[in-house]
Image (spheres, rainbow, N blue to C red):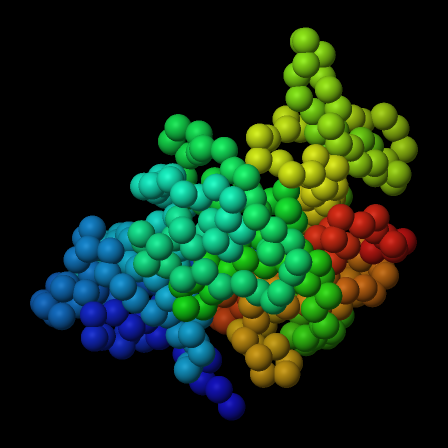
Length: 346
């Protein structure tokens, strides 16, 4: 049986024995993140060197021999309380720098593919771009506008990827992953989760009508009046609730953008979190984003067993609950821009 031990490797040190662990991986976040709490001995010069403030020290986080995250240490929070010394170490994937920083060179990024543009902008940061499976949309050259003042690399790349129905997230090795929404929605379930059965511990759901609209319009202002360039309808909404999204210069298909807004709103309106015991699936795989599960939880009004995509996985360790994973679940149709075929509360 795997030991399920989290290990931080930094500056030649292999650190274990954490009293608190949080590791988060999401398909809609450009960088994964970790927070690890451990005892701190200020007399250990090797630890002090590894945890040098503002050193942006490279590191790797493992679950046994499986790499969970490759990144840098970005934050320390040492604490001394009545002789009890500890430090909480936080960091993100190598791609975290793309979330924080602007674009150094915007020349020669026009008329490249999405992969080409991403590679061009990631190269100064020595970040590798990986495509998660072939897609014809990735072969098309893109005419881009210059970034807005102060726009980060992540914001700029997302402004190109989102209208084309791609997600940007991080690989376990710290690279930038380009994921097709359609491919994500086709993943086969790695587990069946049912209320009252292991490993499922708890399920929470919310049904928020303020997040959904009957009509999604992508529009631009023309002579003071909105010019509708694309729209999508949500026939499940029984009253008029229109919303308007400003068209972007780099939007190749306002109709597709409207469908993307519809699917994102549907996902946001039905947030579902399933908490499972242990850090591995019943089949022995580590839990991670991009996997799929089937879920039945009548107590959370999820009375129809159906498939969900894991949009985010958060590993946790604390004294009260031990090792758990919070899975943020989204109905697979939401990532395909398709109507929900079967309501989970039906």
